[in-house]
Picture 1: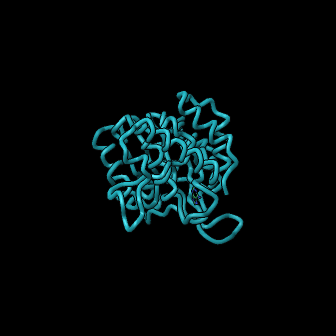
Picture 2 (picture 1 turned 135 degrees about the vertical axis):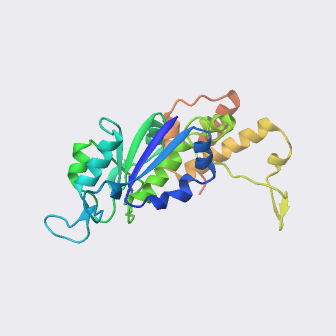
Picture 3 (picture 1 turned 90 degrees about the vertical axis):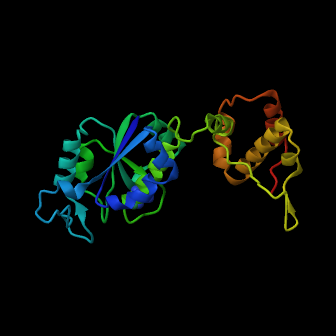
Length: 250
Ligand code: ADE
């Protein structure tokens, strides 16, 4: 069982996400335990204060070291992997998510306002993680994004092992287009190949669509995909070579 411990001044923000369908089920099934810890509870201040004005001046408030240090100590976080959500950090990507999905336990600290006292980050050896080059009002939404994408990689969370199998050949590629009933809607029809029940052809069509979409929209992912030694069947190799031999369409 994986244990993810989140330290925040706004624990109520996590309810809907951690209790929601897939993550809620993962907890009920004993696959992941989420602990949301209110940093305010560890404040030594009689008003449960956790922030103060920054030395050197400037706008906003900064998280004081005392509540964070005491919370981490009382949880036994010494020597553990601790992430701090921040736009200064390493950008979250599939590689980092896969790495975190192998952990038995890790911590996430969420900051607010102008951030946290730097001594919290250095003394606890925190790893700064960003979810993208934009600034949120706090680390909570970023932590939820990280927890969601890591959780779906934990064994058993998505249910059918098929979906992960499926993903392995598509890993690094964008998803192919999906369709559902009806076959014909307002004059728009579903691609013929998907409706004829030939699973080999369906699979190859989907693979081809993934290749084309990735090349067109994400040249960076496409270059990475071609560098990897993807394990492909003969047919899949044929499709890949066909796509490679054609000029990119506008
Ligand atoms: N906190 C504020 N903005 C953030 C971002 N982009 N990623 C992670 N944490 C953040």
